[in-house]
Length: 320
Image (cartoon, rainbow, N blue to C red; front, top):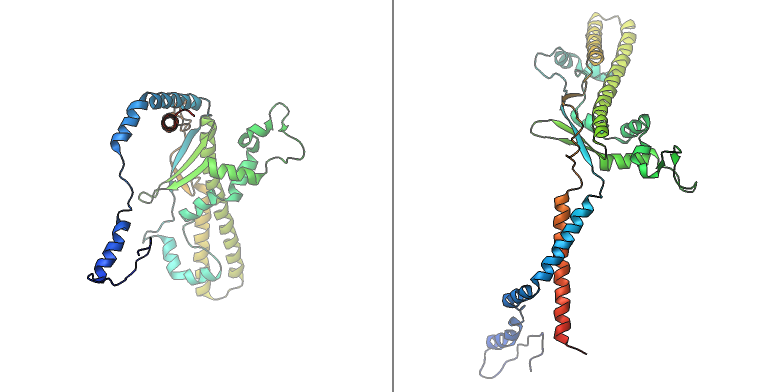
């Protein structure tokens, strides 16, 4: 006897083992999924096309109308070119780095032309400390959480049990929903993008962020150069070796050059190629009303198919 789901290699008189196995496996090979009955499917849609189409149109129109009640989000962006240190072969600072690099390293002095690596500046621009300071200096918490701010009373809504938004909350909203920084690997250009409900405010924030990161990197470069100059002056006073004094003088000159460039170059980290402009009131990025309508059409079509299948099921069962 052959049991379901099992293969027995039982020797039978007049039959080989292979024949027995093929005979046992034959019913299992017939257990395949039935092909789709396109004729029945076409008949289903012919009977219910009006219902499906009607629900799709109603749902699509409803979704499109609903999109008019969704707040509009505008986008402002700044196109930036990173300012890198002068790396040409004839650079005086590069020549100094090759000659006195070990001495400068021992003193903790950087002989680059004063700029910062692009990745460092981008990371600074997106850092928690930088964004929280930007929010605090511009009092943006009431703007970012306007639904919780009582403009008339100039205070936060709600009871004392619910604490007001913190700078950390503001950072989470700003970094995830408002600010986007992207880098084009081919051109090395940076795009700083701000998405907000007010297009004019978005452009102001974008330009202000670029100005702040340039000012921050300038201040750091000047501070580092001043610290290096102070250290080198102390070393110079206690050094009698003529050769070592010449080396220190060269390092002093390089740090003074760095301080001069940082003091006289406003666009220290990024050069603004295309500043942010307030977008046209009709050029919003969200909501995408076409997507709303397409989503509504799809939901309506699925709903129509479900209703039609339910009707067919009821008709097949007949009256109870």
